[in-house]
Image (cartoon, rainbow, N blue to C red; front, side, top):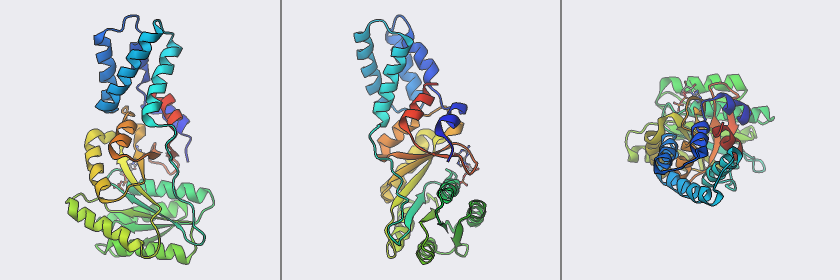
Length: 300
Ligand code: GDP
């Protein structure tokens, strides 16, 4: 996986300079605080967390009196980390249980980067010497299984696919069965992200999960969310969170947005930790999420 620090440093994911400048002003009147608030909300931090941070910053700044740039940075860093959570368990459950492979279900709206994230995750596990089987359970889009096959060939993972238009749950079952047969370390199942109706989605994803569970436990349900879609993407993600028990978020396309504050709002709204971040289209452009590295990159 790519080094988060290096890649974020080259991305647009920074909100720090403007904020640091605002917070360093001699006089912090209501207008400046409003501007600070707008900057945070503009970066998708979310209204409620922004208000908590601004309130806390106001109190701290008052206590300090005069501030050096280092102190300002320190205050902001502390507030951002408090919102993101440094003690949160972000373990990705991809470890084999005895003979049984770990099973990961990848869900989310089409176009968010599900297949790409599945491919990158496989690449990272294969790179660690693990045997990975991929399941192409998006049987609705003709190109989806081909796209996953390309990733499988590229990273060295076997792909189980079914007939186009076939039953996604049966492909998922076959993939897990294959993984068990070949004593794979992990099976990653890429699902369809059709948001036609909530009940339709629930039936489809629910069935995939239920059918897999006839063979094995699902260890990780990763929700893929596109960081560039802001609050709209979040609403769609919420529907998924209501129909399956999400255990982690993979936040993609963080390389293409200045709205890194979405990490804070998404965790708050969905109540699930960000575990992985996507930082590009290449096979190595996936990184485990590290709050401290991320906040330092945000502060520029
Ligand atoms: P799916 O429909 O959810 O399976 O989405 P895909 O995996 O097909 O991805 C949709 C598009 O987003 C593709 O062009 C990917 O290359 C691109 N993409 C996925 N993840 C990232 C990322 O982290 N950064 C960037 N810049 N592009 C990404």
